[in-house]
Length: 114
Image (cartoon, rainbow, N blue to C red; front, side):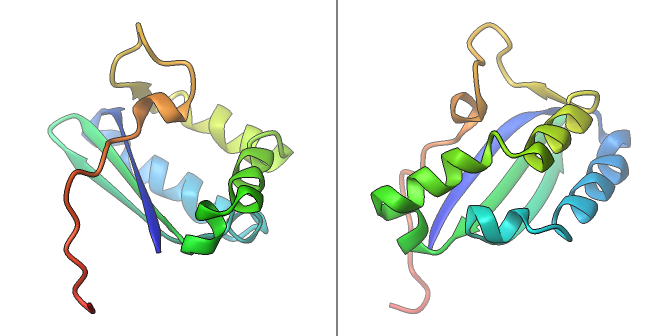
């Protein structure tokens, strides 16, 4: 399993709207196209955390990375990104160019199952 964690800003009162957007998005073919296995959204004091899990094979291989990158131009991905813009702000707007600029860096992992 491979995880990504996006950190951004979100007003707490927007959590239900953002959850609704992802509920609709996750009922499309996009999670399968991207190789997404699990998505969790968190809010804390004006911060937004988007945890997404992928099978390791989906991100560790060249084909897996291409699959994720290729999904970014899909109309459903473009649409969800546009809908989220009214609710989610970059953590640091001066340096943000893409979601990759908002990804936290894992510095420790303890695997529960070995």
